[in-house]
Amino acid sequence: MLRFDLISIFPEYLAPLKLSLLGKAIEKGLISINIHDLRDQTKDVHHSVDDTPYGGGAGMVMSPAPWGDAIDQISSDSDQIDLIILTPAGKKFDQKMASYFAHRRQLLFACGRYEGIDARVGQYYAGKSNFKVHEISIGDYVLGGGEVAAMVIIEATARLLPGVLGNPESLKEESHSIIGSSEDLLVEYPNFTKPAVWRGLEVPEVLLSGNHGAIAKWRKEQAERRTDQLGKE
Ligand code: 6GU
Image (cartoon, rainbow, N blue to C red; front, top):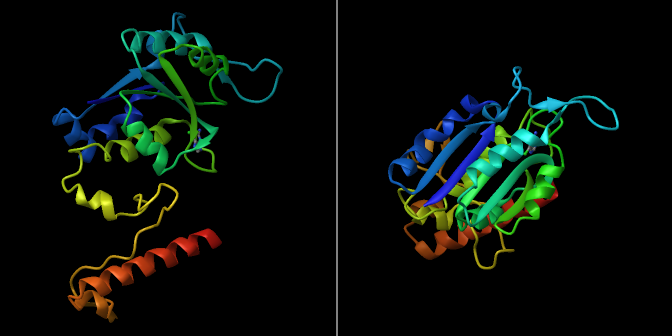
């Protein structure tokens, strides 16, 4: 059982996590997803979660106190927890990280908004022995907040867990699956299904041949060509 916790000021934004593949994984008891509202931790009448930046500048920064209180509450009886702080300044998320997270016990996502979370939050938990802190980005563009990024990471991670996918064989052959060493990442070959001719476009002959050796060779070549092509873009 892998436990996911998320803290956000827009908990409703995270509702899709309960649908489809992840919803089924929750029903099967393979994962749990717990969504927490940061504003529940605020003590002032306005439920404020942000303030102006020290040193000046545009925008607002999320105050450390509500974050600390929320994280403490969620982790109070956790002996091993990965705190994932979503930020465009973080390390770029990839399939290798998804695989790492799929082997952990409890993942806690801090979904910041505005100009981000006071840097001392990450610093504080990095100093606690039961925490590993990761600052993660999902790509080179800026989102309005970490919620969508957290959903991307959770979907990529959860589908790697045993029992989550209907057909685990699809994990082996798919795009970015790890073929050979972990450095040797290939994107997927193109896929086709019936009909054999669609709007004048034919399925490559070799796939209809029944020659499994030739099909495997063709697919490998296609995957390598696509992978090379990506490197050139
Ligand atoms: Cl994790 N957060 C925000 N706000 N923007 C992003 C991101 C995260 N990853 C890419 N862009």
